Amino acid sequence: MNISGVLIAIDPDKREAAITALNEFEGLEIHHTLDDGKVVAVLERENTKEEVKAIRKIYDIDGVLSAVMAYHHFEDETGDPSEPVPALGQDSKSPFPEGWNQSPELNNNPNSN
Image: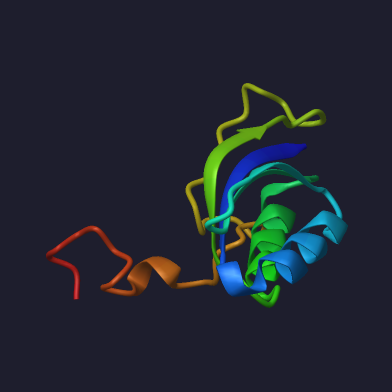
């Protein structure tokens, strides 16, 4: 189970419709809204891959300008806690596309080209 705090920015001119859509978004619970379009919400998903998909779908809601994960908690109820976790992109369950770390813009290593 993944539980994440998400900060969502909404176009103030589309606030009402976007808030309605977010309230209907399965697994998302709004905890606080501001008149300037900021929304604090909690997102629950079964795994990280589904969580990433959900955040991408939040971006598709008309009026959503951004959605940023501010906190992430996950529990693996079936896995062995002594088993090492593979590096990002190193297993078939990774939510990132193959070769994502090869992009110079996303790679923190200044010597990689």
